[in-house]
Image (cartoon, rainbow, N blue to C red; front, side):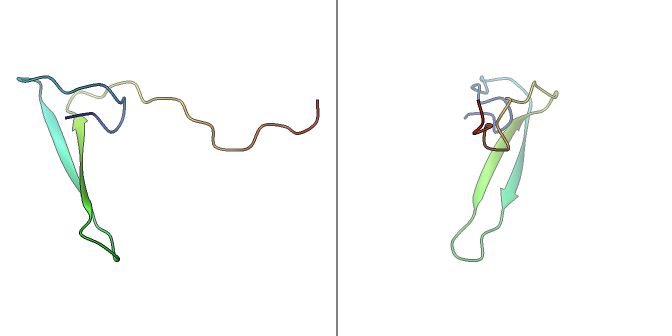
Length: 52
């Protein structure tokens, strides 16, 4: 299993939680997270500046 927050594997014996993601157009999905909060991966939320 891969953690949906930090994108690292959840190893056997590690505590984790699941969240079911509902989808109106399909069966949905289950996402796994480390139980102790891990560091969330940074991601870009806006386009970079087009002016240099």
